[in-house]
Length: 192
Image (cartoon, rainbow, N blue to C red; front, top):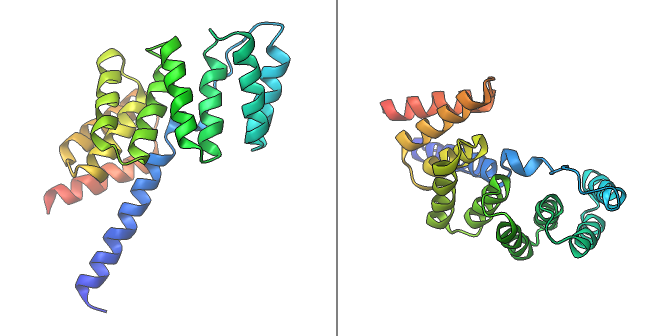
């Protein structure tokens, strides 16, 4: 094996690993469990339980019934989008996110999920624009993380990546070992 092939395979492996981080943003791992009212709470809790046990189709049904009963609620809309995304129904997930943002335009986890879905669809600039708009309103940690990933993996902008990943780390106020390692790796690449 030549050095060039070894380096190419190593870089391909690194990019694959880094791009996997983008598809599972911090916010997408967390459901929204804000109260939905006494009448709808049992359905909501049931749908959340279905999400946690990875019965996403059943969760979708539950969230849709809650939304039909009270279209102003944002938690079931966000969770509906997450459940659809988990089912690999990203077009439907994007539609659900857009409906959520129609109800609450500044819903930051919803905006972050939208940016992630756009990126997964290859719409890098659109994803970046959503994340930058979010950050003009709030220092949302997951948006900094995702923008850092986007800047590194998709734009090869090491300074942008370093800034956003460092900001993410500072806002979390704990040591995310994967980000610490990533920042060290960015530093090493910057010296080359």
